[in-house]
Length: 59
Image (cartoon, rainbow, N blue to C red; front, top):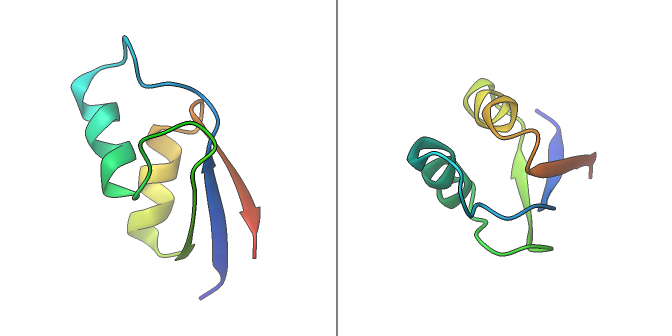
């Protein structure tokens, strides 16, 4: 599987609880924080749920 770098670009203030928990599960939580993860179907689903809050680049 390929690695991707996920960066949080927007705040979770005034977002539904599910989106806040998804951001936490990805290892994010503050704007401009980045994590490098393996692209699995589970991670792809999480990214899809919060794609308006994050940016994704291939590592």
